[in-house]
Length: 327
Image (cartoon, one colour):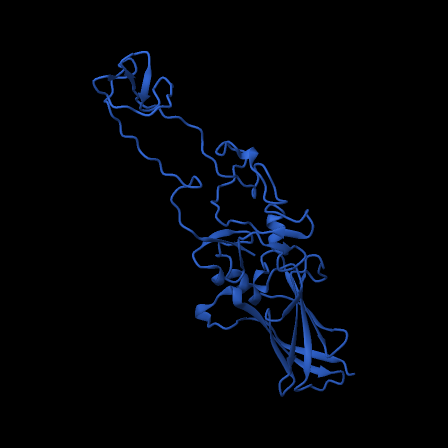
């Protein structure tokens, strides 16, 4: 089998996939790669199927634990022997980034290792530092307010959640999956886990109101009593929850009591009195043989009480949204 080599003619010019530049979205940016594929005699190899592998390295030697992106692409050379692909559109086979769009070009100076195979082991083609052009991808993304772990209210239904976001429905994810590892590094097991194994949960906001974390202040007087989601975290921590509650309170009412003939015999009442006494009897209407006791109050002989609004929970008026979290 002949070994394949390449002369890289155009390395890493920034292109935009499926969009014109005026409508550019940095999440769809890739890096254009073009190379002349030759055999070990120097002869170009037209119409030949090859597989390329691209690895972004943290520095010239790289660090396998910090490699953000590894992908493979299978392509066919053109009639002149050129292989033309767009890095970022291949199949991810490794790396810590959730997607190529999530690679953070602000953190370090990256190098690109390109390799080739027609079957069997990969042969290195070139290792080269990324120059200014690929960093246009970072420059176009710095204005985005959304980082991994950001939660926002989404006005669409669950079938229209945008790419790069997940519904906050408590789903269990695998933190060894490169797609979810960045999110796990941010939220950890705060929102639940399976015994703190390699499984973790996204927040479950279904039917819940969100409350700002107390962070040791006194705005949430019951913060230390907050409970966890299953396997999650309790107390004054992000990810804990509180069940519904109603603060204790009391009402003072004007009340009056009726007596029938004998003033010592209680015949009826209207409601609780300001002195705290309560009589469980039906109210009577004052008449010839029944009178209101002025020792309790000088109120009218009838009183209209408001009927309370009741339901299965205590809540303010609200609207329903889907909360989503950024990968």
